[in-house]
Amino acid sequence: MPAQVNIDPPLAAVLNMQNDRENFEKAHDFSPQDYLIRIYEWNAPSISLGISQDPGAVRKIIPDIEIVQRITGGRAVLHDNEITYSIAASVYSLFFGGSLYDTYKKISSVLEAFFLRIGVPAAVQRQKKHSAVPGRSQVCFASPSLYEITTPLGKIAGSAQKRDAQAFLQHGSIPVHTTQSKCRELFMEKNSPDTDYCAIADFLKNPDIIQLKNILADEFQKFIDRH
Image (cartoon, rainbow, N blue to C red; front, side):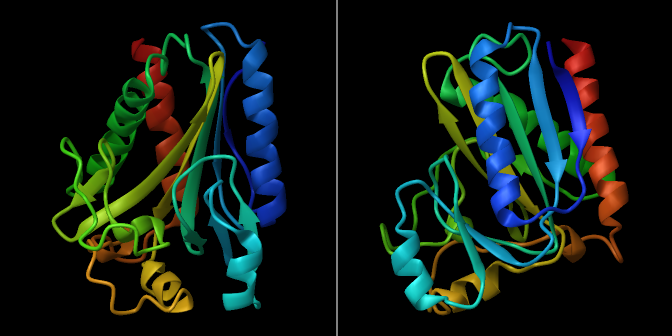
């Protein structure tokens, strides 16, 4: 059975979401020792929408960029110059199992270790903050949720999760260069007053995406080895 941390090449948006969806389905047959972790990129700028958002309506606003729908919740994310991770496992996973928030907390501890290792002063969000204008923004990075990662400059990673009684999939976006302001502009939310956001390049000069992907994969493996 699978127990893998895979670093994938850049893929089209449809293939990235297809792979995550298939891994979630596979996870229904996993034992507590099994998991599938992907560290990946997107081969062209793309927008992913949460499961409750309407792709047709968004395409009318933004017709010139590839739009896909995630199986997870959350809001819109512009995927460009970023690292994305996904984890599929049993809800009884020895490494990432438990409740929705248990899983968020465990994965966030890995992300926090990754950021601190590369020199980004990041910390896990211990208290949920509400949007300044509830329900207004369609953009994921508009506000941090419980156990997401923030820095003194703002939110630096956004995650979403799908789960049922047997399995879960969590995936998340780690911007290497700041693109979420462009996402707000695309959604015509340029003046939204919600939470600030940032990227790795706001802290590191000339970050290397390949090196960063390898470090993130290593932090996941170190977390698993400790458990």
